[in-house]
Length: 210
Image (tube, rainbow, N blue to C red; front, side, top):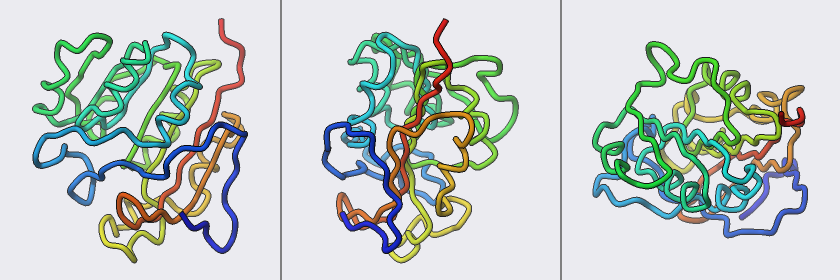
């Protein structure tokens, strides 16, 4: 991993992990599951920070795709709400203990979790800017947001190249500013599983839990 020329990393001291993001989704929006329907390995960033989620908490896995993170989080003892617009992907999560799968187009229509908050909100390889503020507001007191996706500069490596799907410099920091405390943040170039520019954050709601 090579940092950008202007350092954009902050870490609160969690153990280091492999830098791989896990497999990316196929189209420019990154919303479908992998063509062969095999769940890729969980993101190392999510693995690294998942234990920051309060024990036995309720977790939202947004744009869950193949369910790689829903499975990981359920195995850690969390109650997971996995949501994606892909019917087949969500059907493969049926019957897995600890996971409640929901088919919904989160970019259209009514937000399916209005008024609800979560002990953890996990998002990877997905960006729909109108949802950023809502996701931050969905983090319960003492809960955490774990977010990782492609960033500006990724167009040098291929898709996604559309700026609509690439985080601007510091955008995740701006999204949580004044709402959540940053535990770790990186805006970096990675080499594996393929060269890419990524931005990622883990941030906690410091309001006391009830």
